[in-house]
Each structure stands twice: as structure tokens, then as C-alpha cells.
Amino acid sequence: MKKILSILLCLLVLSACTQKASFDGKDRPSSAGKLKVIDTRLCDKNGQPVMLRGISSYGLSLSERYINDECFHDISHLMGANVFRLAMYTWGVGNVGYCTGADQNRLIKAIDDGVNYARNNDMYVIIDWHILEDGDPNKYIDEAKLFFEEVSAKYKDEVHVLYEICNEPNKTEWKDIKNYAEVIIPIIRNNDPDSAIIVGTPNWSQDVDIAANDPLDFGNLLYTLHFYSASHRQQLRDKAQIAIEKGLPLFVTEFGITASTGNLPIDIEEADTWISFLEDNRISYCMWEFSKTAEASAAIRRDCLKDRGFVREDFSTAGTWLIDTIAKYSDKK
Image (cartoon, rainbow, N blue to C red; front, side, top):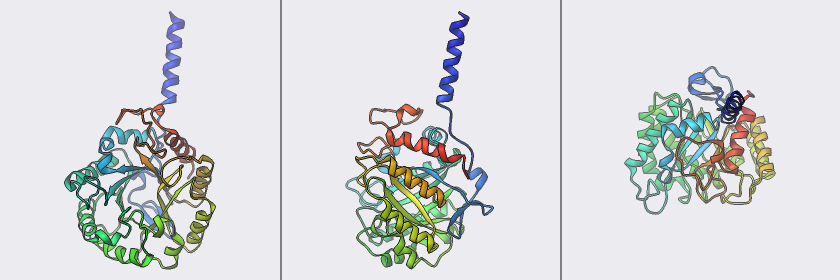
């Protein structure tokens, strides 16, 4: 009997170790406070560089089920993420797009809940105006003005909120994106003067070198760089390097270990190369996407029915890779 009890105790200990949270408390709102951009680095309230490592939601209208406190606890403690990105699709058929027929009040509630749950679980949160098929952010600039007026007034006293004002501008030029940003940034800053703001760049947020040639005349900004490891390799890193050398602060608010479609193939070797590049240059990152869609980029297994109470076995190849990657680098400053 003692032997059986001993074996059971060992199994319980092993299980606890297996499910041990990777939460390490570093670069969290409780310790780092409100973030600011100094030179090319995202820094804490004391001016020390930080690294945000986390994950993005899928479109909020399609993934509300994961916007709950227990799920955010899992993202923070099991995945080890210190940032979560709330992707507000601006465009989409039916009830998907904020600007194209979705229930705006319901989506604003999802933002409110996400901001609260991120605070509860000591994570930063990015409020993402998710330009995609609409291409030019100026297409829905009136809606963007109202949206950012509302959220920046509401969250002006929150130390853990960052704003991403246009996800992936495409089929448009940098001058048009700048014109949009020059309208939206003052709206946010009027309410929340110390917030860090992230600005999308041309060609699906890849042409950071073009933005570096003519940056916006505001402080405390970061510029978006997106990649998918099976599609974007050294050529895009070279563009990023040019931007870095010109002093452009970057944030990878979206990336994947798949093709740019979000589907196969998966290229982990190239993803590891990318992460090493980002870590070396102190560039924060969020993986796409916390969902169980049919895409290979989805972090949750398709056969997982949970919306909280996750264990490692519930995650896909992409999800477990992210857990291991965050754990690998979270001990490094």
C-alpha cells in the first residue's frame, strides 16, 4: 500500500511539473508600469528595455468565447505571455467587421472585457484596429476616429494598454498611411498623452524600410513588422535591419510559423531564426493566433472543445512552439 501511495505521489508531482506555469513575473504591468519608447527600444517606467512576448486573438467577432478571465489566466501563466492582442476586424461580411455591419456594442464589450482580464492577469494588451481587406486605413477613418476617441478616453489611466491604429495597410502608399496616422494619433494623445502607439506600414506591414525614410513626427511610436516564416525569410529581415539602422522602433504585432496564408507549410527552423533576430534586437512580438480555426497558425488543437482550463496537450504545433519559445527566452533580459 505504501508503495502504491508513493507511486501516486510521484505521479502527482510529475503532473504538477509538467503543467508548471511558465509565468515569471518579468516585464509585467505590475513591475514595468506604463511603457514608453526610448530611441528604438520599448522601455519600462524606469527607462529599462522590456520584451513583450505573446499572442493575438483571431477576429474578436469570431473568437469571443476565449475572452474570459480563466482563459487569460492560462495565456499568462501556462503560455507565459505578457501581452495579448485584441484584433478588432474593421472589415468582413455579415457580423464580422466593425465597420461593415457587426454589432459594435458587442465588440466594444469584448474590448472592455479583454482589457480587464489582461489587467487581472498582469499582461499588457494591444487594442488593434485590424485593417485587412479594406487596404487603405483612410477608408474607414471616420469610424476609426470615433473608436479611438472612445477607447483612449476610457483607458487613459490604464498602464497596460497599447494602441495599434492600423494592422496591415495594403495596396496603398506610406504617405496615405501617414496622413491617417496624423489624424488618429492626436485623438489618442489628447486623452492618453503617454501611451505607446503602434503604426502599420505598407505592403501588409512589411515595408518598414520605406517608413524609416520618412517617419512620423511624434514620439513614443513603434512601427509594425509582420512575417510568416514559411513565406518571409532573409529578404524581409534585411528590410527590418535597414529600418533598425535608421532608428525606426519596431514591434512584430503579428507573425506565424506558417505560410502567409496561415496554412501549411510550417517552417520552425526559419521561425527560430526570426525569433533570434527579434530577441537580439529587442523587438517584441505576438504570434497569430489564439484560436482553433482550420489554419495551421491556430494555437489550439481543432479537437479541443475548451475555452479555458487549458493544458499543454490542448495546443497545436504552433501553440506548443510558442510556449517553448517564450519559456526559452523569458529568463533572459
